[in-house]
Amino acid sequence: MLRAVYPGSFDPVTYGHLDIIERSSKLVDELIIGVLNNKAKTPLFSAEERVRMLKEVTKGMPKLTIVPFDGLLVEFARRMEATMIVRGLRAITDFEYELQMSQTNHKLEPEIETVFLTTSLDYSYLSSTTVKEVAAFGGDISQFVPDFVADTIREKMNRRRV
Ligand code: PNS
Image 1 (cartoon, helix red, strand yellow):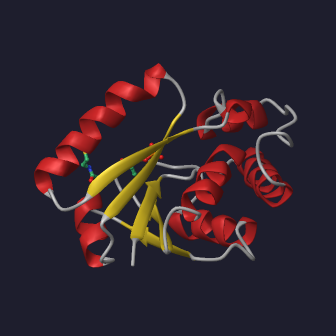
Image 2: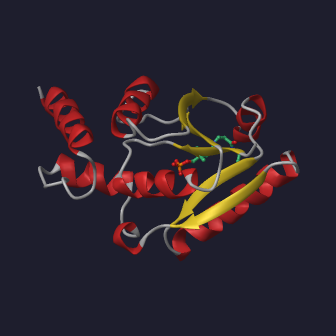
């Protein structure tokens, strides 16, 4: 039984994340999406909001569990009894950070392997940060995120403007 963790901030979830979720869930028996609740960062959405959006947009996908976590990723993976970490690689700019993170995680927990999926070409330019920036300036984000997420972003930004 192969259980993997796909960790991230998901602030907010994009079509790029969904691509990795769909493709990696075909490779494993169970996929746990770990939503980082990082108290040092100030995300646009709370961990509860990010979990809610993920649950909504992955409705009907099999094998998935969505769980918020804080602290070390390898400890979360160990608690979840997962032996694999999945990460998406978009471009060479991701590589240095991802390499460092996977090697650090491997030093901390040699029993857990990190596996990388290269993002589909359609989404290799996409990031949560750029989605928020486009939305902040009133741009159309419908090709970057599902409708539910786009609506949630718009609501949040409108509330912030008031
Ligand atoms: O979507 P992101 O922001 O690129 O995801 C980053 C994430 C959540 C995978 C990373 O920040 C993480 O694992 N944080 C938990 C803290 C940790 O374990 N750090 C040690 C690895 S260097």
